[in-house]
Image (tube, rainbow, N blue to C red; front, side, top):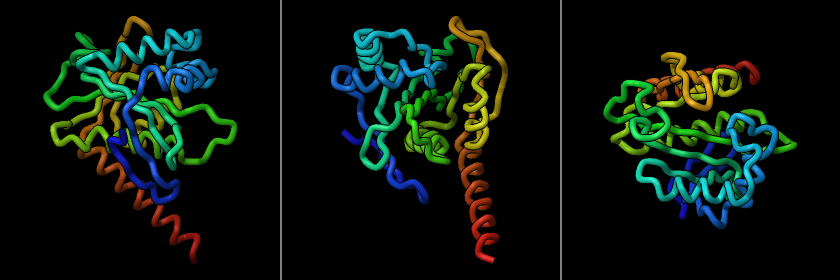
Length: 199
């Protein structure tokens, strides 16, 4: 079931659908055990482990998982959670309207410039589609420089370094206003670049 759609000016259609733990487990297993998915921390997971983990998420009242599509084909994984109940319990001061998210792009031998930015933008728009959401909260591994850059590009601010059981992380937040401002700034830069090329 498709839950959300957006069109990227350059890369086309993106969407999110409900994840089926049993049917999607083989696909997810290939993604999360790939060397490029090291920060997902499931490199050694078996197929049964992956199915069990996403069945646990599907059954959880405060955690959800989705398959992301690009032009109709599975291309990324997204999770949405309530950080006061999952992941960050006791590690930060929650606010009304907070939502947490994770995302993972499928491994590929033919990367497309700007694809990961389009994916995180899609996931952020999906989160903010709910008018009750005021702020997105994330907790990426401190070593994951690529994700820190992406987070900054869509409007996240690093709040502080926190110690989680499985990793040291940078607690980071992005309000609805900062996300809109960051998107507008990227659009303005793209427009200026296009004008420069056309001259």
